[in-house]
Image (cartoon, rainbow, N blue to C red; front, side, top):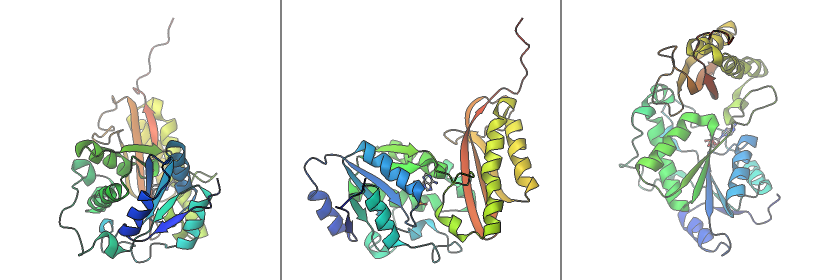
Amino acid sequence: MESDKLRVASTRAELSTALTSRSATAATVALVPTMGALHDGHAALFDEARRRTEFVVASIFVNPLQFAPTEDLARYPRTLADDLALCAQHGVDLVFAPVVEEMYPGGEPEVTVEPGPVGAILEGATRPGHFRGVLTVVAKLLNLVRADVAVFGEKDYQQLVLIRRMVHDLSLPVEIVGAPTVRHSDGLALSSRNRYLSPEQRVAALALSRALRAGRAAGPTGSVGVLIAAGDVLAAQGIDVDYLALRSTDLTTDASAADATTGEARLLVAARIGATRLIDNVAVTVGSGVELPAMS
Ligand code: AMP
């Protein structure tokens, strides 16, 4: 998969030139938006994009619009040389790595994309304005790259749901593809923020994926059982939980309100391990919680 043809554009003009001059056989374009500090989770998205299209664009942009003033914008890891090497290894054709002024000439945009009610819960409740920033930059990137396909990770499940919703509600001409979360062999979801963790904190962080596995395993017992099983794991580890929630797969409804909820749902968790905030989620099939009489 080694690529000897990786191009890098840092301005919109360079991006436009690179897109125009791509090979005539590269009819469709896929975009994988990232904030850099790339790891194998991002690489899986590049591979998925490569499987679907002839021309893969990765964007690397730490978007100030989605960070609150108190968050980690200034110290967010920036590792461009390593990022470019990973992109080349995974067959990315073009990297778009603009500076802030290139994306937001004239400062913060006045017109932005409002995420609606699903943007106000879970991550949105803790991080007001976060999804407005995410959707606004993704809409801009989709337009600049003129992407036919865009690939996002289920790791940021709420983000994926909101991007699908934006594309639907605004009739954007792009196909959104979700890719499964890539994990370390011990279960921890790969994240650019894992590098903030001390060795002890990394061990503590395993409680998140363990809790999600316990919740998923308790699916047949019903939604209350799922939340108890997952919550018990987090409590036993003394984890500082921001939220643990069981929602419908489109996130519009609380799937734990009644134990009668059955079917596919999503179990989501956010927690602070020291100063680092981590998120994770998993699909859960929720049973009725009611023991059926044995068939005679
Ligand atoms: P980020 O650079 O953190 O903004 O993430 C860029 C894209 O990579 C998003 O679509 C994320 O959901 C995705 N991503 C991040 N971590 C993982 C992972 N462990 N597995 C799969 N996708 C991921």
